[in-house]
Structure formats: C-alpha cells, structure tokens
Amino acid sequence: MRVLIQLRPSPDVVAAVADPSVPSSASDVADDLPGIVIDHSYAPVAVPQPMPAVPGGDPLSLNQPLIFSMAPQDASVVVRGEIADDELTSRITLLPATRRDVVAVYADPAIETTLTCAGDPPVGDWHDVERLLCLPDLAAEGLDGSGVPLAVVDTGINAAYVSAARGREVTVDHERSWNPKSVSGTPGDFAVDHGSMCAFDALIAAPKASLVDVPVLLSRRQGGSTLDGLLSDAISAYAHLREVLDAQPAESRALVVTNSWGSFSPRWDFPPGHPGNYSDNPAHPFNLIVGSLAEAGADILFAAGNCGTQCRDSRCAYPDRPIVGANSHPRALSIGGIDTGGTRVGYSSQGPGRLAARKPDLCAYTHFTGSRALGDTEPDSGTSAACPVAAGLVAAVRTRWPSSTLSPAQLRTLLRRTADDRSAVGYDHDYGYGVVDAAGVIAALRRRAAKAA
Amino acid sequence: MAEVLITVRLPAPATLESAMRHLDLAEDEVDTAYGLVPVDPRRNLYVLRVTESAGRRVGDTGAGPRGGDRPRAEGGPYSDPPIEPYGPPR
Image 1: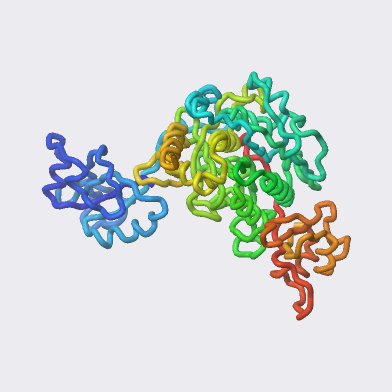
Image 2: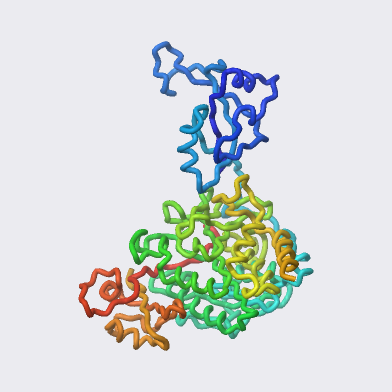
C-alpha cells in the first residue's frame, strides 16, 4: 500500500525542504525507515503546523480559527513510500515507536478518476489482448493449446458462435464435456451467453485448445434466477473433471479449468466460524475437491470477482474481503482484471482473500471488445473475462509442459514470479503479484528447458 | 437453507444406497438425483445432499442427539449456496 509518512526532522532540514531554492530529496529526510520502501521520485514536502489563532485555544482542535505556521520548529515534512500489504498493521503500529521523528503514517489513495467501471465503453479489442499476450511468440514456441483440454465451467458454450466470432473453427471435446443432471443439451450447442464469452476469451492465447463444456450455471433450483446454479453442482462437475484427468496417461496429463463465477452473498451460507461455512472454510467439500483436483494435476483458475471498492457490482453483499471460498483457494489462481491500457478496472475485487490472504494472485485483461456474446456493443468484461484470458495462457503453456514436468504448483509459482509487478514492494492486494506476462513466461520456460537438457 | 451437504467416508466401490444405509437416511431425506459424489478418491471421501434436518441429525457438527452407536457423517452439514457468473458487472 502506498503511504505518506509525516516526519519532524531537525529544524534546519525542515527549513531546507521549505525553501524552494534548496534542492532536497527524500533521503535527506527519511532514510532507512524499517519496512518502508521510500519513493525517491517524490520530493519531500513541508507541511505547516495548524495552531489556534486565539491565545489559549485548544491545540488539538481543527474546528476553531487557525493560523498555519511554516516556522522550522513548527512545520513537518511529508515523504511518500510503500508498505507491503500483509505487513501494514504491524509496520504502522511499530514505526512511530521505533523512530521518534515519525509523526504519523497516512494512506495515499489513488485519486485517478478514470478507472474503468461497469457501463464504460470497451478499452481496446481482443487483438490488443493477443498482442499483449505475445501471441506470435507463444506460437513460435509451439504453445498454442493443441490437445490441451480446457474446461469452461460456466453457462455452456455455443461453439458455432465462438467459431464465427473468432473467424476460425473451435474444438469442443464432446466426450469430456459434462452436464449437471438437471441440464439437457449438447456440448457446444448451448445458447450464446456468458459461457461463450469465457470460451472465446480462453482461446485468445490458446487457439487450438480443446474446449470441455461444463454448463454448471444452467442448473436450475427452485426460485433461482435463470443463470445460477448451486455449489453442489460444481462439486459434481469437479468429480467428473477428476475422472477426465485420471483417464489421461500420467506422462502427458493436463487439464485447465476456468471458473468465472462465485458466491455474491453470505445470505445462503453458514456464518464464518461455523463448521459448515463455505466462504472461509477450507474443509467445505467444494474447497476440498478443488484442492484434490489441483493435487492430481489440474490447473484451476477462479475470477477474483467484481466487488472492487471503486465501482463494485450491485450484487456484492460481503461487507469486506469479497474474494471468498474457492475464489481464494491456495491451490487455485485468483485472477483480477486490468484493461488493455494496463490499469486495474475499478470493479476488480481486492484482497486479502478469505481462504488464502494473498489473493488475487494475478491480473489479466478484461473490458475489451471481444466475443460480443453479451451484446453488439458490450465488452467482454468483469473478472469473468480476465480469468479465461489467463486460463488460455496456462493452456498454451500446457501444450508442451504437462503436469508431469511442471506441476500445477510450479506453474502457479512461475506465473507469479514472472508477473509484471505493479508495486515497489512485490505483492499487493490490487494487482496481486502483477499482470500476467507471456514474454516472461516464455523466457522462464526456456531457462527451465535449458536446465533440464 | 433447505438442503445441505454432508460428507461420508466409505470403502470403494461406494453407492448412494450404501451411504444411506451407513448413515441411516431415508429416501425422502436425500437428494437421490444428486447422488453420491466422490470428493477425494484417495481418501474414499464422498458428498451427498440431504435435507437440513437430516444434515443436523447425522452431521458431525450437527445438533442432533449424540449416541455411542449412532451413525455419523464424516463432516457437515455444509452450506450449498447459489453460485452466479461474475460478469458482466452491474
């Protein structure tokens, strides 16, 4: 988290900072503040001391006539820095105790007003995403998803639509696809909707992957809306995917599972702390089966959700920490969203997650003109689009790197390590470890291959 | 929360009928269409969907009476919340 640190150095330093004719830098004022990475590009700023205008006034009240003193013995200095998100509380508590010149530490929130939100027009198109994911370089490495099963757990895929939108044939693996018992229909032949958008976006980086259609969100429940299911349906789907994985030869095993869905509200859940709870409980059967499938060799990705503080989805009902349940699973990748300009979209959920604190893991591209599955002028949006975009990159990697040579855990680490970090201190709760970086992934795989040779 | 999930550990090959016998569950207490779903084959762990009252009775965290030889589930009752697509944002 970016912070402002208010210090009270010696009066001569304050005088120098306050004097515009004297160049001063952050290191003149604040060096070696433990746990804080000082931003040396930010020149220190002198801040006046508010004082009562009337003798005898309350020295602590701002609700009275005030004068502002820039006298060196009164004024203070502000510098900018960054504290790791998971050390924030302890650092802020300890800092004034260990450094007597530190007056206070304040948040330095982003004041940009241009974050992409729901209803905003698309930012770029899917060819921009191809470019950002270095598609020609992936193709040159033979990483195009050929033969890799890519399960889209969603509302079903319309393959004819996705083919037409992409301008090339797509492959649906009918044998490995699966319907909940309450859903009839043929794999690849469902109505054009959210699932077709996800399939389209997954194929951007892995155009030759084999889509496994798993329309869990079409399952009906009494009183439910037209596009939702129950978590129990997802458990059944994952049990099927386990069979798909186990049926593959161990030496070439690969299965990528993209999940652009989740639970918006605690209303239907037991409260956190209850042993039957889902949102915070690694022992819930769905969280168990996610861990079990990942251990068996599957790469599982979940959308982080659209409950970002800047423009959260109106359905978000968790009062805080909206990345819940399997969307924050330690053995899955939780994917936030950025636009093709490289800026986090305002609705992308921020961490910490509930099962694992360091969520989201990564960000990928969203809010671009892509499938048009949700309407002619509608962008492929939400972390719903970001998740399959990242899943496509994972499927591309799996073309030549099955789980026997690069385990899901190793691949998660590789993606985090090569991500384009957006902070000065590594992990942060907005971007996670950073933005997926296909060029970095390719370079890391080359190094790995050279080492193995 | 009309129906809940419970887990049960049974030797393979397990069936819904064997799970119901093991937990002393009646047919109208179980979502038979959902069936018995394997969660972790290595641990012989399965899940089934039951009414809330049955979940409370046989779940290991339930409020049902505890007796020495009363059949118990491995875990539960667990919630079965609705899930929705994360997009487009509204």
